Length: 112
Image (cartoon, rainbow, N blue to C red; front, side):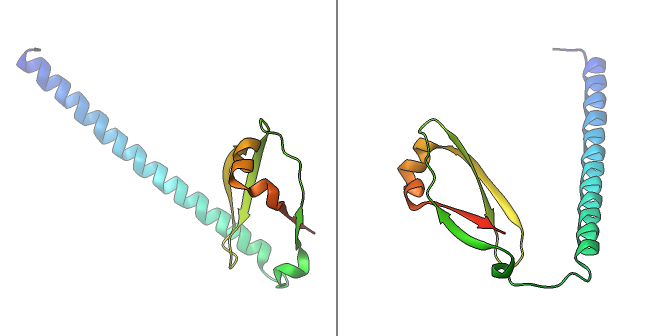
């Protein structure tokens, strides 16, 4: 076991590192918030004055049969309702899609 002065030195060093970690976490939070605000302002500027259209007026939903291979990898993206954006799902293999029955029902795509 280290001597008492060495333990005190190590404790002081650990406390300084923890303090610095908290500072950096706060800086990271502030930067993330600033980025989010900048993106929101940018999107607002793009949307200002743009006509509002029903989704079905600009894109239609079509189900298409897609041949999948068991070892193929397939990315999936979804659209949230009420203008709440898009989201991605984990990439699945063709075997996983087949097991879920998803590939048999056809893949939905948006067509403009």
